[in-house]
Length: 184
Image 1 (cartoon, one colour):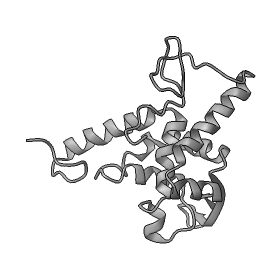
Image 2 (cartoon, helix red, strand yellow; image 1 turned 90 degrees about the vertical axis):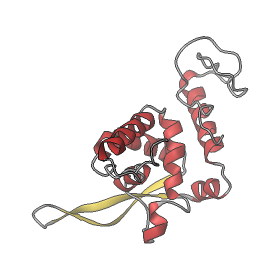
Image 3 (cartoon, one colour; image 1 turned 90 degrees about the horizontal axis):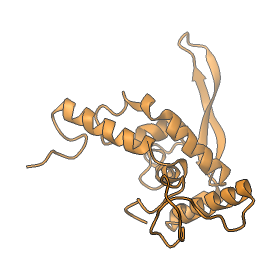
């Protein structure tokens, strides 16, 4: 007899352990790989669709990633920096753009600053509609690697049996390794 799905059990200890394991998994993904998961927040099942919100804050994205865990909202800070890096990858790849909606209010009740949000660009929306997020992020990652190394055909110095990476030496997981995603 296994445990109930995350967030659906009555045991808060089990829920927190599962949430921390998921946070560890997400936080340890390469930024480009996490970007693929983050982009799903802008899709049909994302938090913006339910509320008709114009764009999503990084905090809303983080909460969405932890939506299956009752204690997930309390543990959001553990995932913030990884989500910030993933959002930067999406912005640099031209899949999301920065904007604002409304204003943040300080604890004293004063208007502070506009609330920064991310919205999908036409390129990002197109990728979402045809399940093309992973290939677009991979192309962006490879072009970035080419620009950084000056090598038109960079060899990735880590093992991977994916035909995308070719023969390689030993080392750590590649920063843009898509082979571990179950749906690719």
